[in-house]
Length: 264
Image (cartoon, rainbow, N blue to C red; front, side, top):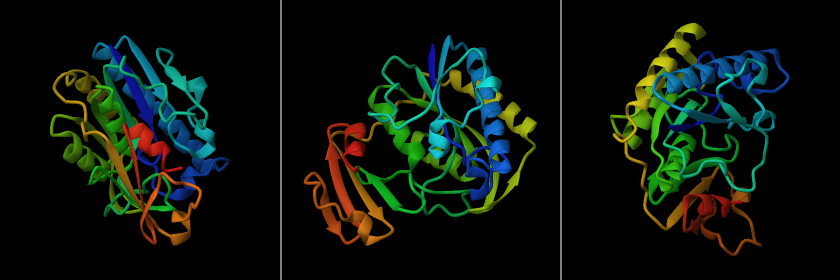
């Protein structure tokens, strides 16, 4: 069985504020080490549950998609790092049996969610896909779903785990790494405790393959994106965008990937 792991940094246990996301700072170095060890725990759980191949995508945009510490990474997995990619999550294809998301965060505007945002904290206010509000976790699950790949594990704060259960169903496995009081404050657990939880949930998630259906939002795909500022919606050379109001645009595509690329 082949498992795809998509990572982010905001949902990692112990990560609670923006200073920990800035490459070059001592606090970032701690955060990326915790991320690497949480991914290792997910890989261990996948292998214990029967996975024969694991591919990990370093999905956090800071540091150019190079956040994982390869010297400390699990030897049984392979890693996709760097960017940008010509195609979003290009290495994810129908050959995978399941997706894990490690270090995920809630969509923009979610209350009591640690470091919540959708793609850009400075630019994007809300994204709707075929009428449904989605964040990064949900959109990645939608891309996987179009390929017939179910997202069976999400790890991150309580808010994103609740979001995953609402979107993907009660059968999806979640590992709550922290409980937010606000955007930059949370009740956290020691890293070793978080890693044990992720390993357990990852192994359990392997048993959910075939029980959690791939996410299906329908086709074609329309994305409605509301920006925080009017200037961000200005793009006079893009004829494939519709301007809905001063801060809102709409794009369409035959697939979620195609629609996503039409945003830029």
